[in-house]
Length: 103
Image 1 (cartoon, rainbow, N blue to C red):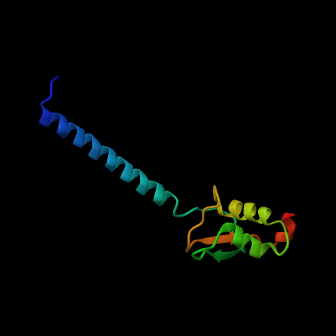
Image 2: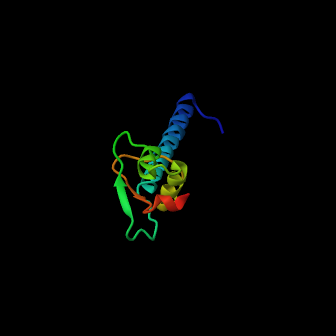
Image 3: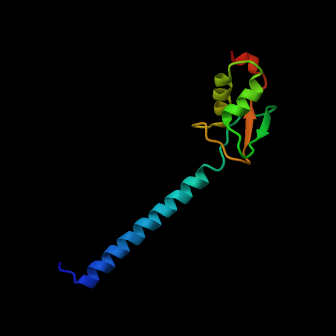
């Protein structure tokens, strides 16, 4: 099959637009998938709201009261189903009741 110059340009532009559309849809789907994580068993747990500038480590350090901050970070991640330490402002994080039990 032979294409004219105009045909090649149209083909390249079409493939580029389809690729960009696929990337755009993929990023939107990933963004929506990360919006809400549902983990059962939060009855009676306290929660904190994440503010701009907060990190998981700062929140855990405030809760640790001299205990192992790393263990508190890991427990917060487990309670909230977080795959990593990335948190966003406005999110609610469930926090452990008793940090002394995490030693």
